[in-house]
Length: 312
Image (spheres, rainbow, N blue to C red):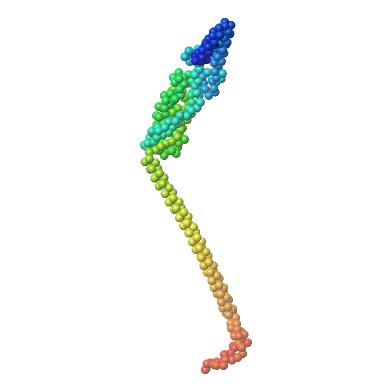
């Protein structure tokens, strides 16, 4: 029970006594005193019990001196002599805006950085004895100076482009650097460092946009060249196809002419051979074709054409 509670209980007891005196009875006065003592005792006993939540740790003070760290649960403290201060053990995130820094390629930037941490369970006494449990004061003393320095050092190892494309690695390196920096005084456990935003200068942003536009233009030209090459390949393929078709047609005609000529030549050769082997075949042909009529006109001095019957 606090001193304020005890004073309030005393005032109540005094009012009860005064009430009994006003009524003027000794018995009444005695009963009022007994009742007041009982109420005071109840208030003192009930006010001496307290609880520590699972997300907290308690610092038990006896006459202002730290006695022990109280774990979660229900506990009792002596009234007037002891009091308890509760330390928050939950994880919290603290944000730092406009942290000026330079990249490895000398690009200025304003960083928005957040740190996620909690009080180390074995450092609760120090948290109270040095900062009276005030986390903001502890953050300002232990985290902020190191964070400013370590983030700038780590960010300075990254080029502007890599700081954007490799953000996860940048965060991991910053968290590791901060953890190592506070290792000599580890009241807090750093769970992570997050570089939430990187604001570069307008000139750098314009340069990046111009470079990206140039890269897009190059990519478009490459795509156009690729499309033209595809069209050219298609045209060549189609031309080759037509040429092959014409060539095949001409070859077919040439082959047909050659075959026809060869057949005619073979036929002539066969007739010539037949005439050579059978000289009388000419006379036989004449006889077969003669209709038995002599010519009606004759050239003077010429002989009358007739069949050569020699050999018959």
